Length: 92
Ligand code: SF4
Ligand code: SF4
Image 1 (cartoon, protein in one colour):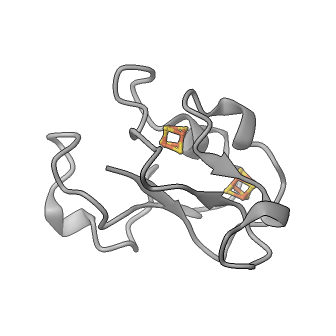
Image 2: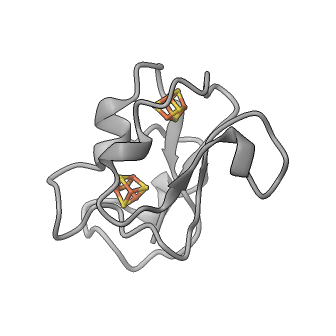
């Protein structure tokens, strides 16, 4: 149950304060050492119970940087497994 941030990320910082569960860390704290922001998949709840859409993706100025992660497939009913291949943008 998670979204993930792809390498389109420009590290603008718009998403991090929008997350209701503090699942996002900046590029300095990216555990993969990449120069992009990172979503901890074990923390992200896809904003279920907090927002109608994932707030990070709503705040992100890029085109499709934040995608549905393949991690966990038992969350938002309307998001099928076919969208959870890590390439489909959260906001269309
Ligand atoms: S989808 Fe929601 S819970 Fe998940 S990282 Fe984005 S803002 Fe946080
Ligand atoms: S809002 Fe988008 S581009 Fe900006 S840091 Fe977050 S994921 Fe990266």
